[in-house]
Image (cartoon, rainbow over all chains, first blue to last red; front, side):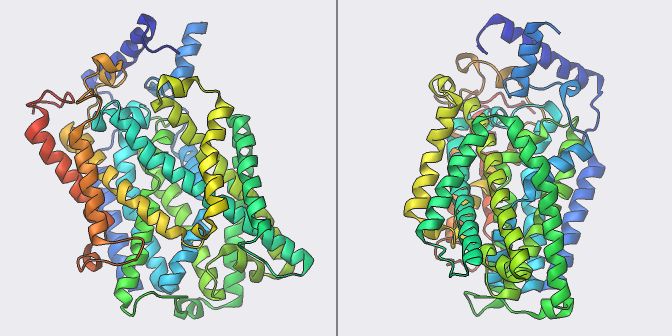
Length: 56
Length: 474
């Protein structure tokens, strides 16, 4: 598909506007939040420390 | 839907435009299955076997968990978080970090070389499986570097070319059969191992060929190999994650699928390698359960290798067409596939020893992949605050805010070079020589940190003043 045509640029604009709209309304579904990042950190540290202590 | 809408949708699926949330296919469990299918591959046996060279099973399992969880988490943050939020193709996102042309250079360095190397290694594994099978049937000695292996390995590459040339449907059919069957094979092998040895006996076994007297150093090398395995998903998982419905769904399944499945396969490979004193899966599989089990396992592993090869070849060529020039995009699908297979065939013919030292090749790739993960995290999370300019990413080069200097972001490329140099100053994958700091920090983690910090600091200092890269003002 030719990515330089007006039709293609309009399509990109349409898709970008969709995400702008989600942003403006704060309507992102399933965004990673503080709980996710803290949970991830705890899981990683627990696995690293736990297996280090068990294996070495 | 009109023809034009269908065309746009198809183009978006191929990566030319961001996918809208409503167009994305996978929920949590679909993505977990998809990336488990990618991770449950024959290379897990190879990596597990290589770990058995350095450390015994107990330390090996610890190294597998520690290395993979860190590598997979950092890689998924750098690639899956933006892909899950915006549905953007991974190498299109990369334009914001390296420029429109810089992303092409990174693609060649990180994806093309990695995939060509893996194609050669897996083809040789196929060849050795066939050689082992014929040796069992004919009651003769296997010859892992012989002509039979070479012919079978070249045949494997030819067969892979044929399957991928037929398109993604044929690959999907292979995946649906192979992924669950490989999982069953792993569990079966684990059962066979545990039925012949108690768990405590297995855990007390020694490494096959530890290179150093210092056990901590051997343990850290084992962790480093697993960090490399975790970071080696960098080229592949972002483009799978863009098919998921949202950011959270794009991220968490990697912990079950990529981390969990790969760790299981590696642990089976490690235990079998140490129990039989042989790191090569095509040899220990002939010993694990007698003639019949050996025949089934080797035959299946040969078949599964073709699936793994087809998966990575397909993903790489789709990406290559995305980042390639118009000349590359105009090449026929079969032709570009065939050209891509030339180097793996040359490696099979002239460098068959690569198979036995494949972990050296794997660890070299981490010098790049760890730095790429660091740059990705610094750029997306700390410099752009998780916001991407979709119009800019998909604009033609002439009007793109990611032109930087001639299409290359010198800051991103300097950061990548710094990460690479930090890595090889700390740890030389070829000789296993290491600096004192390696025992405390590994090499991948400092490389990831150094690349991320350099990218962040230089971008703050110079990019905004030069009007590069449309970074936010705050």
